[in-house]
Image 1 (tube, helix red, strand yellow):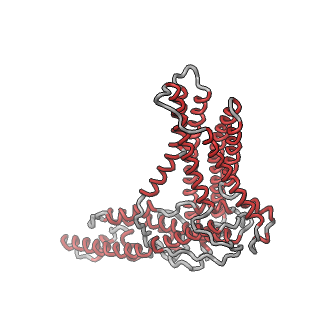
Image 2 (cartoon, one colour):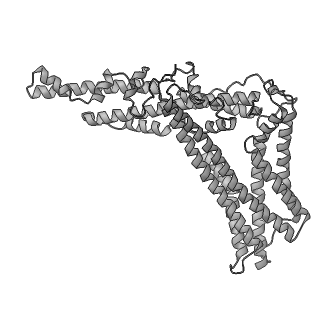
Image 3 (cartoon, rainbow, N blue to C red):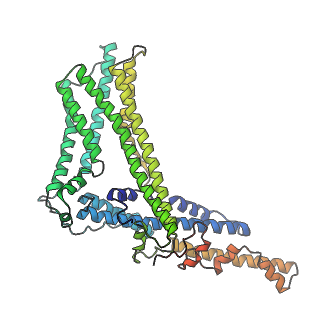
Length: 494
């Protein structure tokens, strides 16, 4: 039923989720390191329950990360060999191998600085005749052309501002860009042709052994629809045409065509986050379908949980007695957060594009009732095109990425914490028994039945810390003590 439930692009979206529960890890360390009132049984009992609950949440997140790691490994293989819905892309394959290595390090509770670079499999696609520099790749081309376009548009905004001010005081203000500067707007054509070169080269090159099973049309569609290429091709094609027309045409027709381009931008920016939200929501619905199926059939393992079932003991700390529902619900929660993030980021780009559209309208067709409408218009275009979406937004993101602390973040070792927790609360149990015994001696109570009665008053959770099995025991029968989730009846990964 779910054999091919998730496409390559949907699996890639799941791989972008942050499944590690750092909030639970921080809360666990805060409670653990907080000074305790050792003689207060209620505080000890409550602390024990809180720590067990947090460790359970951390364990659920680790198993979800394990599923994510297996998905990343599958994507790496798919991008290496080429599959029905996945083109060959050695850079994407390397990216997902590194992601899988990072996730494995977090699952194994290892410092991320100790990650070894994954060794790629034997290359099955034809090798290039000349070695290609590591940093020269399509993503770098798109990155550099994006910065180039941001700088070019910012210079144009400044020139337009001076052109408007020149009308008020030509002695102090003067535009500085020559008319031939518009030629630089044809850079959209370079990226448009570069994308088509990649598409045609990937379609007609010698196929890998796996790609021989696919038609050339399937390979063409895989490369054409990869990532954000469709949106980029549409945007570059439209603006290359508009800028080309602007070079040869002048007057009202050229202005009208340019304004139509800004209307296209507005529609395009509304479509992109809306469609992206729809794709993310489809994944959420598929996960919900898995959850509903597990509730009906406890032995069911869908495409996500099958990754956990396939561990075959290659990671020692992956225990398979965690509730299936808990894992799926954790992944679904993060997927819903990704949906919201997509919409919020879309609101930013839509707002910036709207400001540009309104600003251009004020500059081209300034309302008579609004004084200095052209200046207001250029101000709106600068804010929308340089702060919300353009140059200064890119600079802000770059600074933010450099300022964020690179402090080593080692995940919690669950097995070690469980042993320490059992040992710690076992000592509390002994201490409390001695405390009750001293009270009985002070009161002159020597009757053994009374002593047993007083001992029974010790909270059951504290006594269970030393006498009962651990919350994360390998015996699935102990799952009843789990305060976070209950497993489905008859649940077993074996």
